[in-house]
Image 1 (cartoon, rainbow, N blue to C red):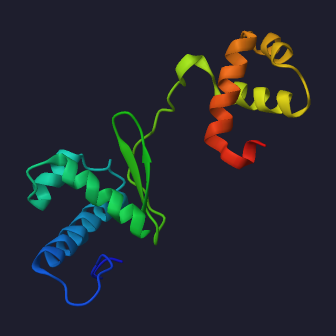
Image 2: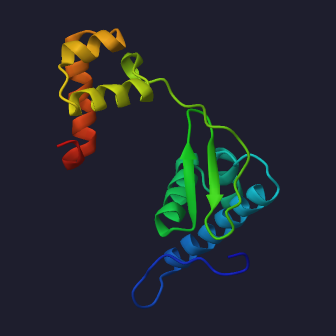
Amino acid sequence: MSGHAITAPARGKRTPQQRLRDDRLSKMFRALERAANSDTPCPTNEALAETLGYASPSKASDLISLLETMGFITVERGNDQRIVTIVKTGKRTAGHIARRQRKGGWTEDQDAILMDGIAEGHTFAAVGKILHKSKNACIGRFRTLAASMGHQAS
């Protein structure tokens, strides 16, 4: 991708605003690519906004989301940093995303035990005993997980 213009899809003739956005997209991509190639952390929104001439750091974040939507990068987000992977090369910016503790103290393993137990026909009370959680806590967590899974939960 390096050296190639990155342009957002547009119909017809591009406006000056579209050309400016595309120029900023290319600059953003090159900055992310440099960080990935040198195994350094992803630049902050503030640093990227300054590089791109934006007054607001949120504009830099918007461009990262656009590059992600366009399929040029993937992004892992954490509380205070992100790791960007350049799709074409597979290179990543340095860093570590700390996995967040879920609200209510539910871990991924506990979620799996809950879902498996219910799928196998156990009651919420029985699964709750295994997990040291109340029946109502298990019911609430099951509903939350089922809602996030949609039709997969049925």
